[in-house]
Image 1: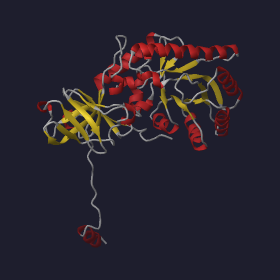
Image 2: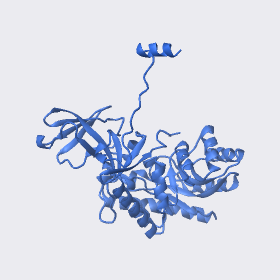
Image 3: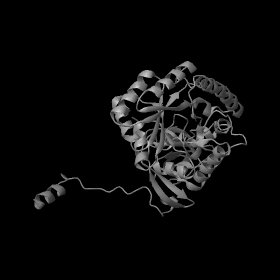
Image 4: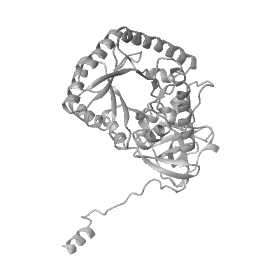
Length: 388
């Protein structure tokens, strides 16, 4: 038998086993990281965590970072260790690796419809404190039935539309009716409301964001007043985000904020007006290698849409004045130099700031955590692709 296998291998009929080396090794040099890789500058990352945590605590508001920004349990554990109340996830499956990693307070900031998702939710709810969003009585009743059938319970937050025009009830009367229904059903309990407006996060002008946040806060108060008149306590009001955090914590309507990108930043958030009240550093980078220099003013990188998103703009180089990423293809990205003297040479490794960190994280299995010129750790992005 061994002789037969040897002949088959020599004839090329049996594939040789290959071992793909990791992109980086803890303790190794940052310059030796293979590309394309996602790299996290720990000094900037930790500074960002402290900045947002202090802001929230100063105003007596809880910080519940949104894990959809990174899908990495190690990052969430560090946020909670620093004082975060828990985390948010956007999908039921996305929450699984976080529960497995020991996170025990998770808000799924989305509506959940469908028996398979509800069954998985019940399993998670027996391991951790889980809250979810509802905006329809039929979905709420199905949620209740599933929790009761599986011997579990979850907290319910009525999702209210404060201008996003996505999910959420449209009137205070609807919110009161859903809250009352949640109080009467088994397996669920009314916890509060979610009032999230993602569109406000990216308004470029600081004054625009301030005025929009004031408008949203007035609308939220209408919902809170209606619940109070109905005799329904509303202990939690969750929402807000990175771009509006400075206004959200001071609004006196939110009890917790769901900021996520603050820990990393990206070119989209980096382009808005932050004023002087709040500042975050870029900590997340896409590391790529120049694989071709076909002209005097053009360099081709070894990454494309399978390593970075581009719906919020192409990633942009750091530390290369006059060098811009002008196109992102499946496997290549094109850098254009204003001056040929500033063009990198073949083999140069370049850090770029992603256009949008959330979907970029979702394209990678791991993130390389570096401090200075050394690799400190490699963290698994365990929830990538878990979008059910």
